[in-house]
Image (cartoon, rainbow, N blue to C red; front, side, top):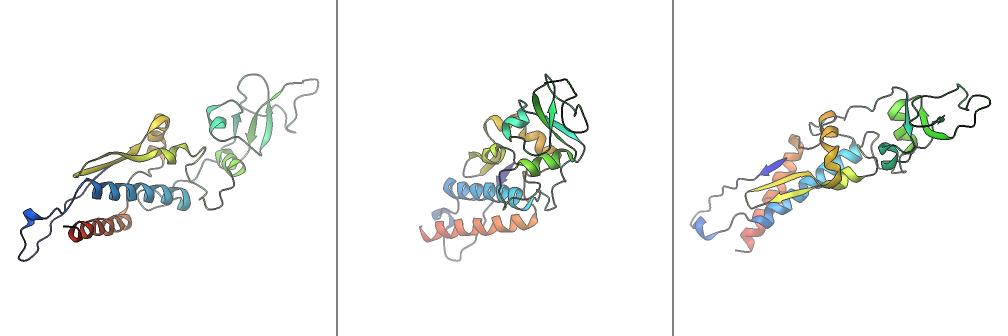
Length: 201
């Protein structure tokens, strides 16, 4: 996601060639504010880039294997124990216990309420977070950053390992970007940076 700022100001009796209206420091400030808006809006409000609530998590029954990538990012809690060697996919008995005579180890947690139940039961107690906050380990939100900044343009994207799955998350529930109200907020930040440069000329 790229942010381009075009600044045009006419000042009576002043040569614009003598005034620096915009620089890389100003763009860096706007881009950093863009990152903060995206992260706070997504995690605390559960709102997407279009200004609408993010799609609810799935409620189809599922099992999270204790050694799965999902479990590594957010340890599964609650639910019911799932037994069996390898990668568990379902309960082996309605009681949540292994069949009689079997001593299979617990290899996962089963959730009747699907991913939504898993997330609610396992989340790390952040009461300020929205129900749909796109957070497991927190790696994705920590990875959103300004990846390139020049005086003309700032680019916000995903850094590091989260680049492997972040684009797919954004495709399912778009969060990278800004709706109209956020653009107004960014316009205010732009104005503040222009004022800073004008005062310091």
